[in-house]
Image (tube, one colour):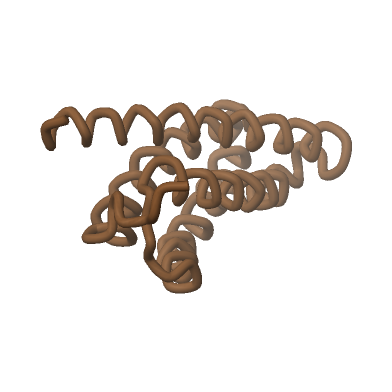
Amino acid sequence: MNKNTKELWRALKFTLISLSAGIIQILSFTLLNEFVFGEEGAAWSHFIALVLSVIWNFTINRKVTFKSSNNIVKSMLLVALFYVFFTPASTFFMDFATKQGWNEYLVEVINMIANFVLEYLFTRFVVYRNSCDTAEKD
C-alpha cells in the first residue's frame, strides 16, 4: 500500500472511531445537560462528556489507527498536553456562547468538530509522528 493510501486509510479509521467517541460525547452531554446540570451547567456537561470521549478515542485509536509502540504514558501525556489547551478553550466557548443565547447543542457540535480536526492533526503529527505502525501484530 503506498504512503498516500495508507494515510487516507488512517484518517478514515480515525474518523470512524471518532464518530463512536462523538456518540459517547453527545449522549453523555445530553444526559448530563438534561438530567444533572441543566442549561446553566452546559460547560460542566461539556467538560465531563469531553473527558469520556477522549479516554475512549485515545484507547482505541492508539491500537487500531496508529498501531504505535510508543510508551503509553508518554503518549497519554502528550494527548493530555493537547487537552490542557483545548479543554479550557472549548469549555470557555461553551459558557460564553450559551450565555449569549446560542443553543448549547449547536455549541457542543462546533466544539466536537474543532476537537476532531485538531486532535487528529496533533495525534498524527506530534504524538505518533515517528511511531505509526510500529506495534507488533497480535
